[in-house]
Length: 467
Ligand SMILES: NC(=O)c1ccc[n+]([C@@H]2O[C@H](COP(=O)([O-])OP(=O)(O)OC[C@H]3O[C@@H](n4cnc5c(N)ncnc54)[C@H](O)[C@@H]3O)[C@@H](O)[C@H]2O)c1
Image (tube, rainbow, N blue to C red; front, side, top):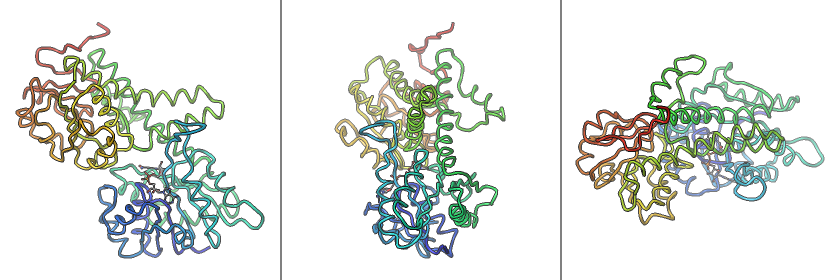
């Protein structure tokens, strides 16, 4: 089969940037991306993406002028593409068996059925969404059911981009995984997909393997990354109880080349649409396979993460004289990490809701995520203000809580912020990005994660468990 057109169903955080980069790198191919969400499609078509990602607009502009189009017409995309990527959302199931753990595959299956119904010739179907092990096999059965020759080859090509650095990750991936069936047709389909990536990715970074290994490798990568965050956060808690400093511990262990320095920042925990979902999904798979201890091991990573947010709010309450009722708290950052506007599963959501439960008033600021923050908290907005300007959010506040490690928060005029706050003024640095001593000198009471708090007159909450 000769490939002229690549189609993709799903124009979200993964489908949009991935196809924009592929189109930019493969000028000889046509790309068509279909999504049922009309407003998203319109935004992509206009060159103003519905998501914020550094470097995306420039790449998109080049591709839109040449060989990339977005459409709401899934049928026409299925008809045009010889290769069809499926990049729809696979959230945690909220109903029925496996609710709260398993992946909800209804969107994925709907795509498989649309492809089966509307493809007028053989197709290579590429699983881009993160899915449970053996999903490709199920999709293969839906697509190829019935008599006659096989029309569809299903490959797994999980995406490893990280939001905030998606374009860089797509242009220079650490590796590309392509899983395919070990049959003549399967191997040929894998080669077709390899040849697309090989236009810009060195061959030795394109790994081919079985479909199941590729699916499991994606879940495992996310589980390991999340586990590192929960591990360092568990030690941060011990630091707080003993007077050690997590920054020093992390630096010391990070210099060990077997461990490495990345993903060792203690804080209020991981968020985003993937880590929690993929961990729960992995644990669910283990449970279904009868591996209860393995499931328990990975579930503990999620529990440790949730604990960071509970602990953070409990610490605020203790330091602020055991009542937050009617106090104004400025939340600096709502995105789950810097350089994105994405708030899905952001730790800020749990923290905001816990503070509201204490009857605090919130002033939320974020350089990119205000609109999404508003949507996340739509049911409770009466006690919340949203401010683009952090100085306005902090005016009259009793405390500032830094929830996203945006670089600009470091460079704010903290004396100016202090001047317009209630006394005593607190800063809870949930991302350990601020200069604790400098802020303390200005007059703030400063509470980092995993290190001693600097409280004027002494920290009432300091109790060294091991003295
Ligand atoms: N976000 C990330 O950083 C990331 C990284 C790697 C992998 N993934 C995985 O990639 C997949 C997609 O994630 P995302 O963040 O892009 O999700 P998303 O919600 O941003 O995008 C999914 C898109 O699919 C569309 N869609 C759903 N069903 C459809 C259908 N039947 N027909 C047409 N369009 C349909 C939705 O309208 C939506 O725009 C998930 O499985 C996720 O786990 C995400």
